Every structure is written in structure tokens, then in C-alpha cells.
Image (tube, rainbow, N blue to C red):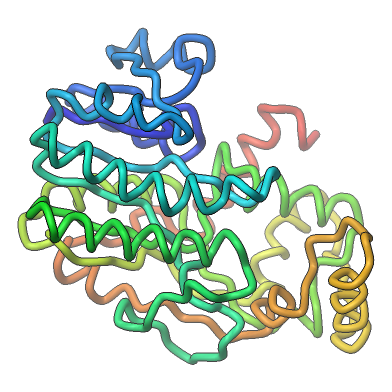
Length: 323
């Protein structure tokens, strides 16, 4: 395939680009300072292409002479917050327009399970649950708006679009779900609230990349959305892996105290990422249904949680986080 990957300099985009190149596909590496940040992918045959979500003029070049466009780049919850809507919503519609004009056959749009209002309690989540553009979490709300806009724009221009909604992507290179979680446990920061019995749905990076490649190639995937998640485990079990790596027990906080802290962080400039909505997310028994991905894409996670965490531990040692 002739492919392009936006956000090729990032965690997911980089892993995807590496796989595509290894499989013999042409890959246009879309991002900022590509030559400086990912020279190894250029050496492997990737073609650098300047891409910036704040520069619609860069969209045309990244889409030119491409069969499949993987849109991975996004605002991911860091400052400045005023970029959330332009990057995660407005730019998505503009990119689909550019892809259609360039003759791209299929777009694989990387969305997120965070596009739902995860503060709502559901025992099982399918792709038919409505996305939430008015939820408290800014990242989730703008990603929801972006996915809805992507489908609407693709339909208008009769271009195939597949949305992948990954769960919590961990493994070598993951800042939030590997480095971040390890730092919390190793630093003794309370990370378990109310016993840690709520669910997290981890997704190993290689399993995500498998799904993205299938989304680009399976004909019946066109114009559908898919969950990707390896399994559902409790926060206690998930963080327990990091605890065993550094020989420390993950610290907890009673739910009542956590609620007081969450309320305070909303009202006062404490600099804490905890809110009442995010606290509720940690208490919910999530299970993201992956039946559609398994039946339509033929996807299944090849790396289980034990193996994924073993690989994450090896990587943490390689980069000096773990002695």
C-alpha cells in the first residue's frame, strides 16, 4: 500500500510506521521535525512529510499519492487547552476533505474509548453507545466531536473511513500507561481509589498496530467503528504489575478522601489531574466489547497482559527507569 501516517513522530504513529515499513509498504511520515525526531524510520525507507494540525496547508501534501491515510495525530490532553478543539475536531474535518480531494481510498482514524462519557456506569460498552461531545473531559469531548465530523465529512465525499477506538495503550514507549503508572507506584503516590476494584482495559501497543493494519485492509471494515482492548482487569491487578517491578505495593486512598480531594482540585489551583468525573471512571466496571473487531476485522490480541508487562518491564530497564 501507499500509506501516510499523521503523528508519525509520536508513540502510536511511530509504532505503526515501523510496522508498515517492515511489511514493505510505502510510508509517508507526517509530523513536525520528522528528520530530527525519527531518523531511524527515514533510514528504514520512510518519506518525511511536514504535517502540522495547526497548518491546513500541510494536509494536501501528506495526502498526495496515498491509498490509505492513518490519522493518528491529536491534542492529547496537555496544554494549551485552547488547541483541543482545533486539533481534535476542526482539523479532522479539514483533513478528510483534503484526503477526498487527493483521491485517498480509505482513512483509518484513531479515535478513543474516551470519546464516550466514561463517568457513566455501564457494565458493557459496544460501539453503538453514543459518543459524548458534552462530557467534562476535554480530550474525550473533542475526540468525540472529531470522530463524528470525520464520518459526516467522509460520507459527504463518499470516501471510506474506519474509526478505531483503542482502550488504554501501554507498552514500550507509552508515556501515560507505562512510564506514568510506573512513576506513580514507584514514587508512592496514591493511585488506587476505594480499593482499586474498578476496571481498566489495557491494550498492548503491538495489538493496537495489528488492528490498525487490519482496518486499512479488510473491505468490510469500511464506514464502521471498532473497539480494541486486550482484556478487562481491576486497577489493583493492573498496578500490581508495576508494584512487582519495583518491589513496592501500590498506595491507595479511601474513596471518601479521594472524593474530597477531587472536589478540592476542581475548586482550587492544586495542579492535580483528579476530578470527580475522573475518579468515577476509576470506579466503573468497564468491559469494552471487541466482538465487532474480532468478527469483522479478524483481530485478536496476540500479546497477553503477562507478556506485555514483561516487555514493558524490560523497556523500563533499558531506558533507566528501573534498576
